[in-house]
Image (cartoon, rainbow, N blue to C red; front, top):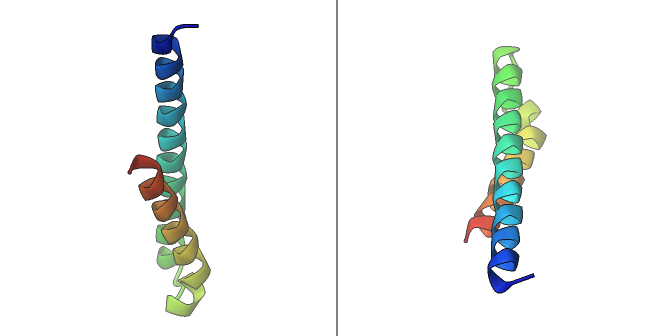
Length: 64
């Protein structure tokens, strides 16, 4: 394996992590919208908003 192969595989793994986090973020966002549309109130969305913020933080850590 050359340095280029290692770099490319690391890059590919990083891209997969970012893609997975973006997909998870989208799923959390859709769930929040569903709950809001269903009439959930602020207190009822607390856990879902917390999960959304956690995914955002993990994404930020991954890309920086």
